[in-house]
Image (tube, rainbow, N blue to C red; front, side, top):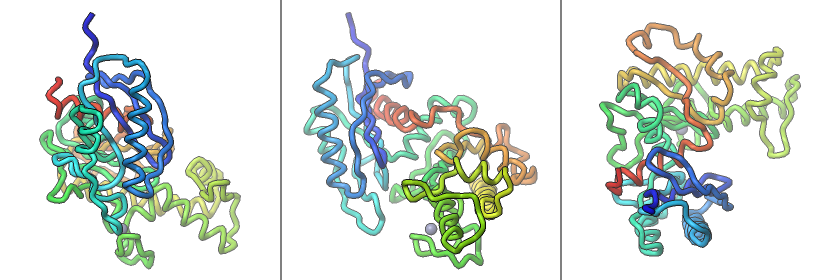
Length: 317
Ligand SMILES: [Zn+2]
């Protein structure tokens, strides 16, 4: 019996490495999780190597033809070089080469948002249009512009760092990138959490509590907003306005048919319900689809996209 061709796909996130064999339809088989630490690229590379070695000791589902990896940071998918996790500490690693030599399988890499965009293209909004913007709103904010079916990567594989677009020209808040008023510290999950904690520490009256991880998540902020909590209202209203501004600016850049939102902050319906009224019609009226939430499973979108990358680049389709 002939085995199904599969790609051994690795999704390295901040807290875990997910590995699965994927078929060309994006189905996952034999998913397993391994520990992850992405604070240092060399340590993170070693973790990927040992996780794959462990994974390959188990029986296979199909005939593994390639390895494909999604991880965080700036990555050149053409050369397979992982430039940096943190722009302040670039330590380029030839990740694709290292893995390819060790496991003797063609290896491809891409970053998490690029992978998610590939998944949208193959299995999500790409079924409807070749012109869209994928926007991830989670711990941080990033995205990719897709124009006529091409994902814009840029000269240095640094396209899509749209969390660092300024949306508040008069802001006194300095972003990690050095500029003032970037959308990421205002509207990302981490940004909203930090703004809330500042207000709690300043003694403002609120029902919000800092959790065991030192965060105030949207699962607390959004219900508190609905209950009329003043701090939640201030932080979240500012985030919503910033996000709406970002989206409307981006639409002006590439004239897409859709803007697709993914990432932890978009979980449930709350964000989309409260964001939509701020988008109006003036900028969005030409769009066939409009601003929508991703229909793909947020826990699988990066790994699905990475597997697709493996099938496409490996000439396996
Ligand atoms: Zn910035």
